[in-house]
Image (cartoon, rainbow, N blue to C red; front, side, top):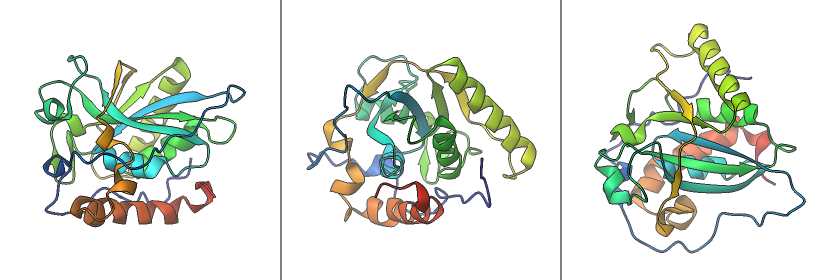
Amino acid sequence: MKISSIVMLCSLVTVFSCAQKENPKKNMSDNSTSLSANVKTDTATFGTGCFWCTEAVFQQLEGVLKATSGYSGGHVENPTYKQVCTGETGHAECLQIVYDPSKITYDELLEVFWQVHDPTTLNRQGNDVGTQYRSAIFYHNQEQKEKAEKYKAELGKSGAWENPIVTEIVPAAPFYKAEDYHQNYYNDNGSQPYCYFVIRPKVEKFQKVFKNKLKH
């Protein structure tokens, strides 16, 4: 796995935070792709902080068929965004990805995961603070578990980050889709301050690092 200079794409210091910018605007478009019955798919679920940022990145990858923002890892059924923002539900903001393994592998998804956020900050990404913003990998099978643990251990030994990796690697739990206005958020709300000042720089850096993996 190529972890060259480990660009900390989510370390931008800004006065804006995800939770402060709740905007119940109905999303204007759908980021999903119709799934053919003939296409073999797999699922990955990651938490990298604010799911608006995570979705904006992963939905651009060739082979990603559907990217859904939602909540997982907590104890409250069908939580609302407002409930999750309190940090009391135990849920993490995360992205559930349906992908075509013949076009993109789980290893490649993990490569993006490690590079697009800081896995060493406990319950925090930038100015977004709380357990809902924790770094997490929710594995769906034994193979995903082993790969996630392998890369975490290798990166920890490599000294890629000054501080220890705190990413939790846990079995996939019930996933609850977030409210409609959270879906495709960056594409539908690009002029919003959080999108313009926080998400846009991350997306631009991501596009440069992973230009060969983007959808055409």
